[in-house]
Image (cartoon, rainbow, N blue to C red):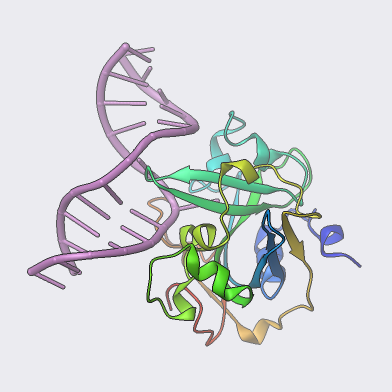
Amino acid sequence: MMIFDELDVKDVDTMAQRLLGCELRRTLQDGYIIGGAIVEVEAYDQTDAASHSFRGITKRTKIMFGPSGYSYVYFTYGMHYCMNIVVGPEGYGAAVLIRALQLTEGVEFARENRPPKLADEQLANGPAKLCQALLINKELNGHDLRKPPLELIGASEVSAGLIVNTTRIGISQEKDRLRRFYIKGNSYVSKL
DNA sequence: TAAAAGATCCGCT
DNA sequence: GCGGATCTTTTAA
């Protein structure tokens, strides 16, 4: 059973938790690879006022309404990219924001893309930080995550007891909804 | 056409 | 802890 066969469920919260522990792997032009485990995520869907898909399909959000298993990369604050994995059936605007990675492969290459003198934990402990570390930009918006240069690789399910469920970060609407999930005690998470 | 807000990060105090 | 950087997308007029 591939992880991609599981993505079509409408329950984004369940899918967000399912994506914890899965791997994200970036293949660079010269063949170098940067990869790591997903340790922090947030759920967004069209019923949620905090979601880009809440107001329907636009040029930017159409990816969220497309088929699951694709990347939704958007630009924000004039200088940052954030990356999501589109989930849910086609026509349902939903995605899971990837907020932090525990890098396991190509750490030295990721480091070159980030400010100097950072601890390993700080290379990808934030949605825009991990995009910097893996060189993810708008070129990868709408990319099929089943293949390089950016792949999602399934892993066994993380048990509920090891997952913390809390409020999302950096939003102004629906602040109180518990749609952020991270692996308990993991030092690579952006904010405990 | 204009204006405001934004799923953030970093450096300085 | 605070503010600046910096520009796309969306919405309203």
